[in-house]
Length: 446
Length: 105
Image 1 (tube, each protein chain N blue to C red):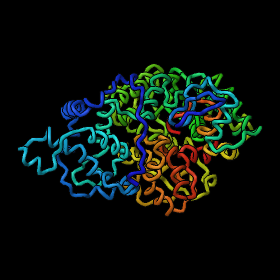
Image 2 (spheres, one colour):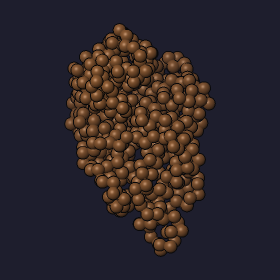
Image 3 (cartoon, chains in turn cyan, orange):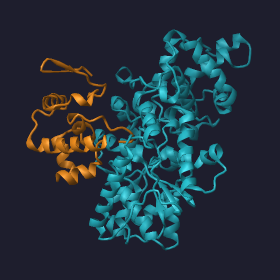
Image 4 (cartoon, rainbow over the protein chains, first blue to last red):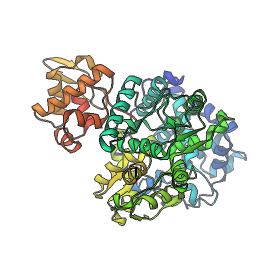
């Protein structure tokens, strides 16, 4: 496995993130300087590098290690690639002790290993659930990917997406006229399906809700997007999209904090301009983490809350504003917890309550909730050139799903929806992947 | 990916095998691209999809949503996959000379 894993292409164009390519011979020194700076303002990074006891509790809890069987993919070993350098240059204590501890000079090979193995971590945080010290490898991966980006080593896939986001307000780079054309088409589709005039409003000032979808909802996952329009219509909520931003997936989180902040601000500004009462985020795991955990901190105080579609719809369901006919979803359905819902965004029970309301046969998979395995596409590992790696990373999830014998795999996250159909086909699990919105839309009584 | 040679002309491809310069596309380039996607022959059905994609691309600069592609051509997704085994966003867009759709797709 180890020799076959492909490294994603490195971006040629990173100017839009104000990053430069550091010449190869200067990279080790530059990497040390950046790491030194990060240690000053990222206390969590310093803590996680300091407190590991090498107990090994994380090792066989990591789907990346289980799927690739590469020892460097044990979370402890992955972080040790940095910890050895940290021990040599930054850790307190006498140098002979550091040497015993495996402290190591930094060289180009170290940086190559960082690039390789911090792009085989999905930032899923499952290791943190099992670590007695609470070490969250995702935070280390985010930091080291950021460090690498400052050396000029960002993946082509990630850099291209952040450029699209900056230019168009969505990751796919779809210009506004195409978005509006697609939206008009979906309104016609809704009319054809329901016989009703169900609007998909754009830029309505004073609407109650600004809904932020994933741009893939307007390309591949249109059933789920149309379902959202039906749900708001039935609940009697005035809502709108913003032409400034139709993207809830925030790829900046994975490797470039300034981009994450800027993307977050773009949505907050859109909400303020439209004077909405709340922002509702669509189905996207890591994007949700940025909206829930960071919005108020980095761009607050805000005049409105940022909530998830499931919180919004659960409220309407409990108040009796929407009802479901479960017989429309008779198949056995299992639920995949997106990592950033279950381990980073406080969304475990809400989607289950909605599922139990709208499907007849809901079965849990094992492991589940905060113990659930990642789909293998987390942290934006969706590039085609990494397909072989992606299939290996998805293996533990495929086995979890296989055991349920479910016909529908509910995976309410845009990355999971892109990754899981390929994983299930590759590992020969006969299941259809759908969002929770899709299932609510099918069962909604209009 | 290796560049294409069409009628003695070198056509540059990116790492994913998509055209670097969309303006060099013509029917012969499409045929050469089809071979890289294990599509041996471009039938009338293939051309119906390709022509729709190109018309949309020329108007809007991107690929249409998959649902719209299906509706406008009258082919369901299964049929599109039969014609273009790697799917609408990859195989069909590549052969039609579009840029590669990116993001969570």
